[in-house]
Length: 333
Image (cartoon, rainbow, N blue to C red):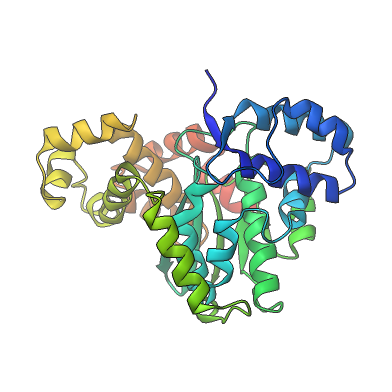
């Protein structure tokens, strides 16, 4: 049985594709359900509607960078609450922090993770349940962020690079040309990396009254991040040090979180996750971050808690289909 997706998201994709010149009638037929115009804020439709819409779009325009073009084409306001909450923030960093709290209103399958490391601010898009169609949601969302915040800062938002999960065609990156920034393809996780100073860029739509009013409305509706998401983020926040010390066992982590091992296991299971899922996902994402810099591969393996570099190489190949050295070369790091 397919999952559910916000109707407003499917409607926004439809409007963006029409802006790109695709045929509205054919796309609407492919969706197969009445979304409403505009859709009710809390309306949900089967996630297979996205697959049908995307298949129809690709048939009309077989472009490998269509998801990026779509993200840049979706008009501001198409995502309702989420657009206005983000756009009315004081700064770029405030906008991303608002997205980290509220993105699930329109993209329940994507979790946003924010981190400051070595002079860079990272914005990672994690998809614990996978993506269908592959890579479309995260590629579109990266483009949305670039388009929204570049406009919102009058062109000042210039990330150092983007990471996309899909491969480039023969070393070419049409996505990079559209985004006007370097793109590292084949990454285990989609992400944007930007200089620390960029986090404080002012947003031209900043409106403290509107932002406060919308945030209170969303909180009153009980639509904020679920406890399961918060638990996984709490674990991931502690895993970096724990893995480097080779102490990332479930019993120790439960103590750090102030609960028993059994309680931690039960709470993860209730959200369809396991301890090994969380650790594996963190290692994969952290590997991509570390490999973006000059750290020797043996040290990357140690930071991730692998006793042997060969074990890390096997794991990374399973995650990406490439060895760490191959991925680093293809990313230009």
